[in-house]
Length: 488
Image (cartoon, rainbow, N blue to C red):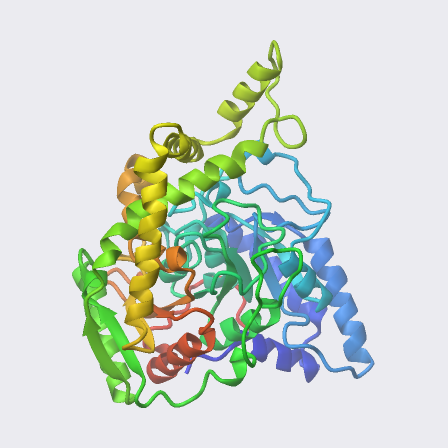
């Protein structure tokens, strides 16, 4: 069984086998050496981390008990607002921007003395599947640095997979937590829409975005999810977690659980990935679960629906970046119109500009009904198709990505091909469902393969339980350690 790192380090701190300062210094030291290869961090917050560590050590010296995440070194994706700490979305247009408020998730973790090691790399404004659209250059895969970490939360996945953070928070708009988790051989949980507050998350597509944990084990994902899934009045879509904490129910028996496999999820999937999914099915059968095959024809609409809706929302959300109030401003211009035009042309990268243009087009007069309205109607059809599917199964098992991590540079040379890596993940966001990616094998080159478990709305405990049972059954066979980082 893969041991939960959060509990491992927490126990060491509570038993005074190591001080929080020593633990933090060990991680900071390894970031300094490993980040040269991984490029996972774009900002390292050593002073913030060490100040928190001293506060935790003071509590320990007084014999006080620590909260589950207290004193645990972690990281945040660079689109989650942190007061007084740069938050750039890895875009030139937010160069020099330092928020004056915290995201709700960071307020929660900061109040629990989480040790923030820094902000991690990402695709610019979370638009990409490789982390290579970042203005800082892409994060690399801790299992092979010639391959990408995935996107858009590539820096978080690289840091956690490379053992230079115990856990991190990313954001998932169309697979941006689960896809890099799959590529880096770790666990990524995309919660139900509304379960975790989006206040302070710099928006890409507001009806699809969701913050979630990136961790080494399923137990760690449950612990972090329980901490951050609280109702927030600052987010009009917030509902918080339903039911008891998931960490209390992840080790329940799954005998009789119906695990559904939609045949359409296996279309176009590479043979070695498909074989790993089939082997996972056999593991679940040995645990007493029932495998149910079914058809989900609405899935064929998911990718075009996602890109129409996400880009449309992006064209609206990114309209605020004009060089007037904050961030980058072009150096020479004749009037305000030229200033805004040149600022956006120079400040946004090619991928962001592509998506803004597409989004503006589908919202424009004469095309709104043909594209945006039709995509919204199809979104309803996809949601209803999942509702029908969950009448016959408890969870749905699918590949996370049709392939393993591709080599660096492929996403830049062939961006259209990389859009297809989202084909298995975007349906979850369209329907607002929870999904978790966990490792289920490796390809011939030793690169991790991931599978995802999809649950009905607000059924995080169900998918976490099914994921933990698989993780416990296979153990170190598929959970592969990278050669980087802290191992204490």
